[in-house]
Image (tube, rainbow, N blue to C red):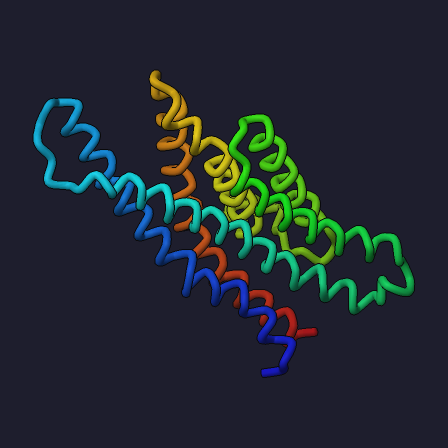
Amino acid sequence: MKPVDFLLIIHPALAVIIVFPLIGIVSYYSLQTRQRRLALANKEKSKIPPIVGTEHVKVGRWLSSAVVTITLFGLAYPIGENIIKNQLWTNNFLQFIFLIVMFVLTAVSLYFLHSARQAHWRGTFATLTGMGIVVLGCQDNVFRRTNEWYVSHYYYGIAASLLMIFSLAIVTDIYKDRSNRWRNAHIILNCFALLLFMGQGITGARDLLEIGKFKLGG
């Protein structure tokens, strides 16, 4: 195994070590939070402690950040490989600078999205983070499988990342909205995200195998 191959496995390793355990924890807390809320709405005494809601939000923030971060790692390998292969710092310096700046700005936007409290700033940084993910995903050498987008690890990952960014942006609004529209949207979209994460586990293993065979064949 060559040293560069270790860069290829950082993305799946982080998914197994960090993201998927967090998905399980967040899913458990979400069920506990909903059961407690329904019990209180029916004026029943719940054995579930009140802190479960706070823990759900906290770990949910960790999960959202981890998903976006791991997406950046997943994009960094093929983009970095393309930069080195084509020596962009020499042959296309503007593109080289653009790619570096896009990675930095996307990471910075994600950081500020966490700390933003006002709705317009949350919307701004969520939009910038999402745009950064999409633009980087459109770069050369990224394995997209566009002809089979419905079973594409790339498209599942981009969609899941955008949903996580949206979740970060609306988390404050969920607790302010008495009509529960934001809460219901959050539940529906994150149930869909859970299905995407399941698909990620399958398509990610498949793509690693196919990319490995391609490299050996090359």
